[in-house]
Image (cartoon, rainbow, N blue to C red; front, top):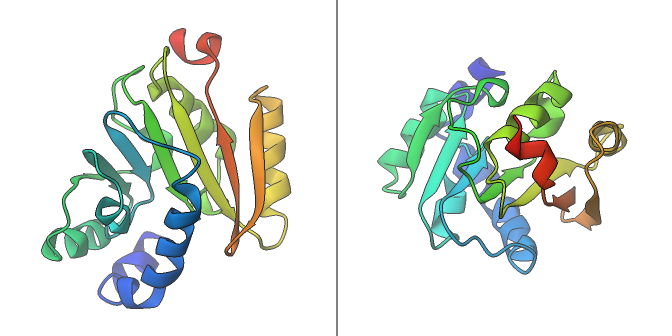
Length: 174
């Protein structure tokens, strides 16, 4: 996966910018970040052009992050995988992840890490999953197994969106 995204990093924006920005526009009415936000799998940082607060852009591909920095996008770059986020617990108020979670092998582990970094008093999470194969139903099962209540918005461009808040008991004790 890393090699693939490193390879396409120079062409990523020309390949996906239009469709990603369509997703951002649809989701803007759902989530209004108030503080720092984090974009998991943010690639070249396209979200940083849309969001009006400081953004931590996380991606496994250093080349994708570098491409975004060279494009003069404003974000804090963090190269790591989602299952091992080096982010302090209870510190993030807004989290986005567009078309990434279907690529994660251990979705439950990644979701547990996500819940641990979310602020225990105020948090908003928006994760979109490609409407292909059984990706959406798998992610629904992962959320259900962790007893996370969510709002599902289907047919969001090429994705389905899961919008939810992490309950106090899930994030405060992690």
